[in-house]
Length: 222
Image (cartoon, rainbow, N blue to C red; front, top):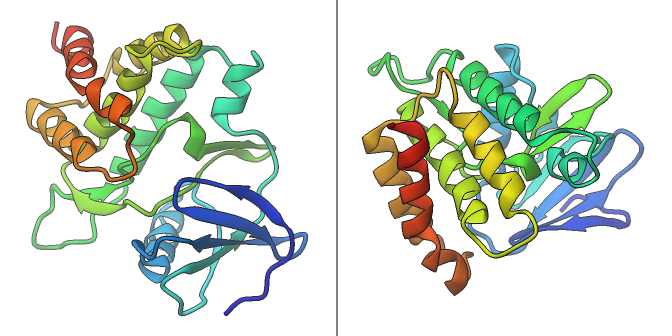
């Protein structure tokens, strides 16, 4: 097991520890993920020019060693006014389009692409060298419409909720879905189904799925 330093942060299922000035360790607490597979897909998209962090193999299902990034998350930059909701939505859309331009890994299905499936402002870090997309634990190959649908549902759940972030999330979602959005009926339906089955969601978050889907349909299919 990789030796760790101080705890840098914690999410719903994992903790991030300091290793040194160049590397950090993300350790899965729940045992659901596969760090080796996640590291492999991050390496793959990096080889095609996509802004994922550099990773170092560990051979572990729970420990992922990656480069230490500096800078705020896009969510933090939104919160303190450094980035507007409209610009954040445009950035997420650009990152989705760039990811789906990477050649798929399944030669038997040329339309399949690598999907992140959790691309939201908390998983984009704004480093001095540009944005970096983190947390690839949900990644799989499939149709791009599903990736767009997942990002849209995550944002829409915030937009229809009763929190101070609702208005910004609504504007961000509108920006994401403006222009060359690739949300599809099939992708949105499957995204909602997957969110409903997500064991880390609270009851309140689950209750927001119906109004969230309605909002996305108004913005994406009008």
